[in-house]
Amino acid sequence: MSAKPVLLVLGATGFTGRLVARYLSTHRDRDAFELILSGRSQRRLDELAKDIALDVNSVELKVVDVTSQEEVDEAVGRATVVINNVGPFSIWGSPVVESCARQGVHYVDLTGETNWIVKIIQSSHFLAMKTGALIVPSSAFDSVPADLLPYVAAKKLREVTGKHVDLDTSVSAYSIRGSLSGGTLATVFAATSLSTAEAKAAMAPFALSPSTNGAAQAASRFVYRVRMPDTKKMLSGSFFFMSPTNRPLQQRSWGLLEMEAAEGNSEEVLHYGPHLKYDEFFVTGSRVLGFVVTWMQVLAFIGFLIPPTRWFLKRILPKPGEGPSEQSMQNGRMKVTNVTTTVPIDGSTPLHVKTVMEGKGDPGYRLAAVMISEAALSIALQFDELPAWARRGGVLTPATAFGDVLPKRLDGAGISIRSQVFRADGSLVG
Image (cartoon, rainbow, N blue to C red; front, side, top):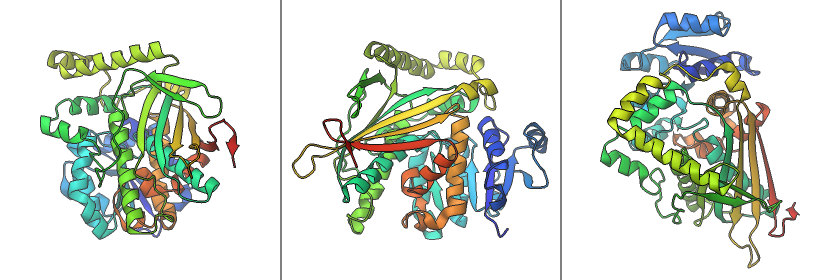
């Protein structure tokens, strides 16, 4: 293996994989790591190299069939970190994760499939802890913003107050402009074929958490609202279709951190406390429009479940490997505003933390490529700066795996994260 860390990009010829390949091949830290780009055929790899003007002398192109365990094991064995873009992950992902866990190789992906994460926790978490493999699913737009913002808020509170403060609620409001690719739609179609047992397991409260003793979470509803602690203005919106993925992932962070705090010094370990209730929504600008958009999502979901409609949608919607135009991705944007509220402190009123993550570009593709790449580089280049529990390995989450490292890397890559603490009267603390 090279003296430098080696990043293996699986699915580099797919739509999002191409974006990851282009981003990493021109990265500011490019001299610090080796890069292997893999795909299903040499022809598609050669096309990729031409399309993104790769320097083929500095990047290895490697054919890997993810249906062949032998090929997967050989490729994984050469890597420090695997970036997996080959979905649906419930179909193609398990052999890759199992190979990484067995060989002690670190892993990130961009899955949004909660049912599959349940399976890899069961099959690979303890093996990964034994070998030291750090396995971090959902390290892109699914579910980095949802997972990192409560963590950043808790850290900001500790900086301002000088002590641990239990959190009460944490609500993320997503204002985004973006598009869907064929790969994402293939994942949606795969989700509609889940068995009743699989769907029930994925939808169970705290499905991914090592502890199910968390506070009761808010039920889904047609209209969502959150008050800004500084301006007192309300943000209104609809149900967010990524919430069924993001909330279980965030709850796993809660459970892992609470478990770590219980085993060590709860004042030293950054954690959220037993009361946290996480929620999120899509910003629409008004309650009426929020109600309408929620209903549109309900109808779309029903359409995916009905076989004739699903067949028709498969014919007219983008296929795997297809996605938005370059111009469309450039015009995309993301602003996620999180408001986290503490329990009352020393008998006084709660504090409120406003944390904002912003980036320019399609959040599900251009920004997702940045997120997953910087997640991989957090491991490859700054492993010793990760939280102590992350360095032990296991199936973790973005917040528990990357701690303070990923927010700083994202900020340096153009995705800013800013956090402020306010009193109940709107005055700034600290």
